Image 1: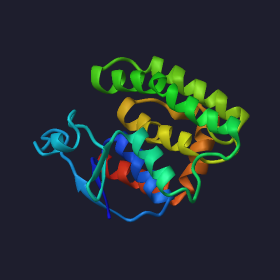
Image 2: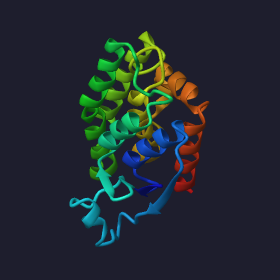
Image 3: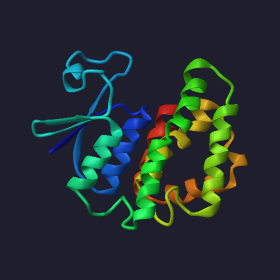
Amino acid sequence: MLTLYDAARCPYCARVRILLAEKELAYETVEIDLENRPVWLYEKNPVGKVPVLEEGGFVLPESRVIMEYLEERHPEPALLPSEPAERALVRLCFERFDDLSRPYYRVVFEGETPEALDTELAKLDAALAASPYLAGSQFSQADIAYVPWIIRAEGRAGVDLGRHENLRGWLGRLAERRSIAAELEVVAAIAT
């Protein structure tokens, strides 16, 4: 049985929850209080971060690595495109993810104004004008990688997504998926 060491408010954990839901994999959740991390968490991940996935005696931290592991371990349904160019675009999305996360966290934790974050959202909006999903024609790990931050951007970072028509359309398409709808419920529960 899979065990996910999780924190509901953590978008990195959301990546793994969404992927697990997409693959319809059963798992147990151990909720971690990020303000009071248990000492034993550092035995599972020396830096004390979540998510951490455990399967039997195998323990794996870091959302991107967990996503890759689960894709290889459970290849169906595929969340990496079969076409090499689109597959490369998924990897490129991960490679450039810090372009979004850095300004997001500067707004949320350092009180910066959201202009730099809005600039990155505008770039995503422009990319989504050319294709329905971040890495091309199908929903993939690239979408899973970004959506947790986007659905938190208005509430946590005070960004107006209303100005980004393609991004709103993408969110609408994603919200039709059970995995994303479930994450939207998590975000709504956190906000209350």
